[in-house]
Length: 74
Image (tube, rainbow, N blue to C red; front, top):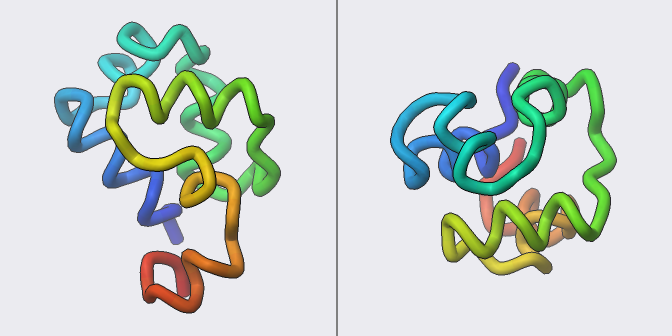
């Protein structure tokens, strides 16, 4: 199951993992791992870069508990 908050970030950045990678400076491989759950822990610097491109607050990107409560992540 894909990570909904990363899906949202991809959509905002232009619809592809590569587009988000290019805009944020985060590698496409890292974005893929976050999207697919192969890496569930996001570094603060990664969240900051994605946030600067998408407008999604860093705390939302990092806070799995808040995302679960808000229904963003099951």
